[in-house]
Length: 573
Image 1 (cartoon, rainbow, N blue to C red):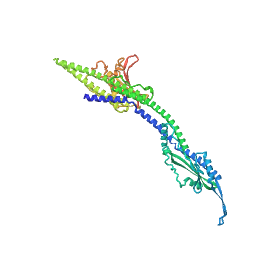
Image 2: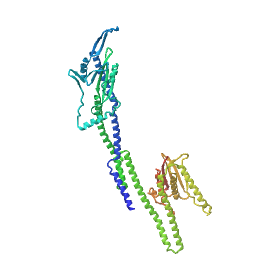
Image 3: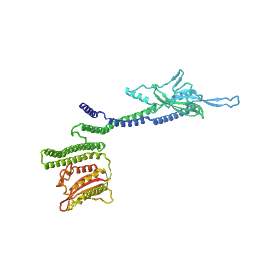
Image 4: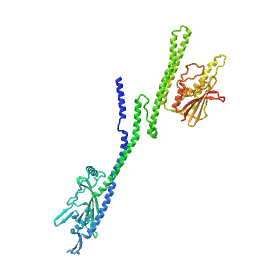
């Protein structure tokens, strides 16, 4: 058994050490994750740039179409041969027609395309290519010009970042929906076909660049006309490098801002976690030390100056700890008081029993037996009162309050007391002893007519509260005296005063009379008939109902005491 207990204690200690020695707070990680996730989602939305790319493509396409129309106009005026046709044998008159002249178009296209990075090709009316700005034709043959990919620049980290960026180009925004551009000898370009039909056409293509990376390609075809006669088509082709560089520049600017915002967010997250998680961890460690310590040297840190929920938690934990220590002190005092109160009748019982064995006189023995019976009755009453007082606190903490009308409750208690007094008084009066029997004290109620004084509480315990006060007042009131119950509304509270006509409260004992086992009885009353718990129970019930109770002497004009007043204040519903 001892081994199992030691193992359990060791496990508990290990658990406590595990909580206090945790290096990374899960709350800190959650705060960091939430803040960074929001920033990452915002950054991802900004990096998408789909609308921005569409606007760049539209602007680039419009510029390319304008350039193509200029080229087509120049070619239609300066690269055309005029051909005269003879009359036909069938009677048709001769005339003239125009056709593109390749020998004139090639140098013109080369000069027009030199100022731009645009590839320009010219097609005749049959769709045959007549000229290409990247093909030089001379007496020695043909020379084809191709752009070489730029060599990788920068350090390995920069190259890795660029490589990752190019891999993500086709993802944000996606370019999978774009048609793939492939040049097939003998197959006409669809834009050229539309241009030969007299209509300008433009298309955005996707091509595989160096290393298989996706790149954009813009093509615009415009018909070459002479007096509205379509003589051919000019096709301008331009890569999307400028668009990609513009998007890349914007994205890198966003990434720079994101990096700064990320550093700020992480710093603020750790600061926020420090103001939340660290104090909570301090409170948890203090609570764990308080749980495992054997004294009162461990205490909850005071963080109430923060003025926030953690400060409120600290204050509540401190108040709870104080309440627990107060409860433990009360239990300790209660146990000592109970032991002291039980020890007195037990000592009397032991003395009476020891003496009874040595007494031979029957009268003395009967007297000792009467003492023993009184002590046993006193013990029984004391144990019953202690049991009721012990259960009271648990019942008050578990039960749910209900509306209780104080006026009706006081009226019911007064009528009950009057009925009991009349029942007890009748046999005495019927005895016919020849002397008038002393009348018992009367209980009267003074409650405003028609006014409901409803409080939230436990009806049974409130009944016990006022019953104890009435019993206490009746025990001190002289025969034929008056006990008055007065109830009045006072703001959001109801004040009940229980007044008697007894000798009053000893000077300086107004607070002590509510202590547990305190007794101050009238002269001549039999010893041991009261346990001293009645007023203590009254104070306990009033405190559980968020009220207050105090006692004071009632004096008349000459300064003499006319009785005692017990004032109870309870909050109204």
